[in-house]
Image (cartoon, rainbow, N blue to C red):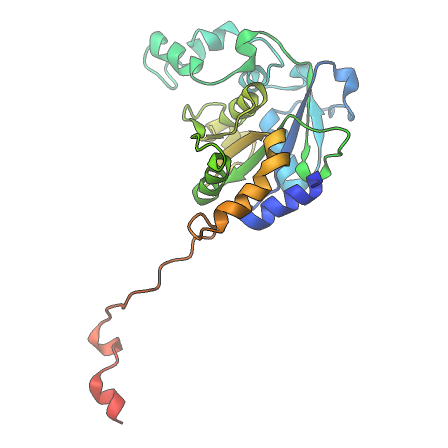
Length: 256
């Protein structure tokens, strides 16, 4: 199944509001298929452009503002102000120790050093077979996340790790799926909502492209066959309602 068909199938099965987004990391920016725009933008903005507008863009660390996002993707080594927790003191935590723990809980490729030089973001539907991405991002509601979690558990029963730090989640989840080759679900951060346009009802789901390509659509279909893991979830109508007397069919009404 080609990427375009995979994307269309996922959107159809899950009734996604926006397109799945493909992410590919590059060791050398010279290999990028498209030059970065002449404007500094965060990774979450590029993902938003891809999922809402269907347009692909590339970027490098020097073309970004958000250091946290760049560190999550391994475009820079995680800065000391982040790894030490200083950036979170007074904002998310009350002490430096708590802040350091808080920041360490967000997965960042950059914690082990700079790994990549550039990133390309595009709609999954535009991916060519000769240029496969590293990961796929989807913005979903909780019920759609349920479907994806069940589909990923279909073969092994393994639970899906959730990123519950709620800081840099989309970038952190993407880095996690690339580095660990596993799917994950996260709670979008304030920055993703402010700069990326993420909506209040949305969660973020990421997965390595190999999983999306080889299994996801098939497992979505198989888990739906049981009738429980479906979306939209059909409400149970096998019950008799109670209504006010004035709105209830009375025995005398049936005699006329």
